[in-house]
Length: 79
Ligand SMILES: [Zn+2]
Image 1 (cartoon, helix red, strand yellow):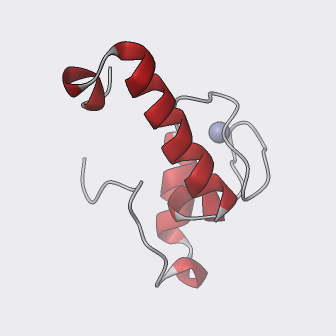
Image 2: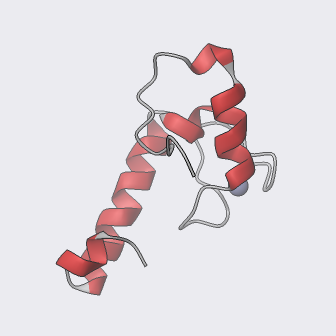
């Protein structure tokens, strides 16, 4: 359950969550700037898990020196 669902009715929060991920994927921001090693989608595509970015993809993004400078909005700084 996302933090948004505390503030918004579930269908609205779902739509907002989807929109945020679709926008990030379209512009290849954060973890979407690399392909996913788990579900093998290319950069710029949503993970097949849909509601989540695979951990391996986030790790790959953080390890990739070419992505420095992009806005890491969807990548947590720590776990
Ligand atoms: Zn994935």
